[in-house]
Length: 91
Image (cartoon, rainbow, N blue to C red):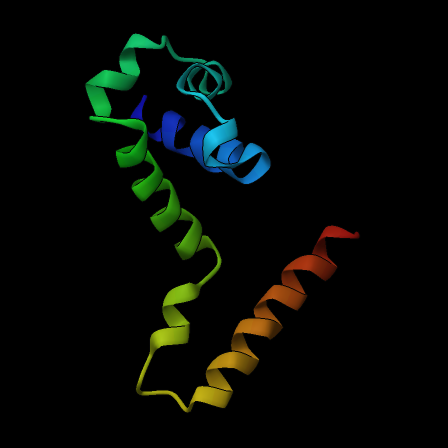
């Protein structure tokens, strides 16, 4: 259930923002009982931290901080990843 909640939170926060996405909206989207939220997260803020980390991984943000790679190359790779991801959606 935790995974379903996190995935739904990423989607809800991205669509409606932190303030616009309520816990009930997130649990409804995840298809889990609202009470299960408290079993996995202390607060909506704690869930947001996990959701932001997940989002950062999906956007490959860690690569932007890799000091072993030239800064311009980091940026080029990041924007190429975003380009390729977006051009793949049009298919």
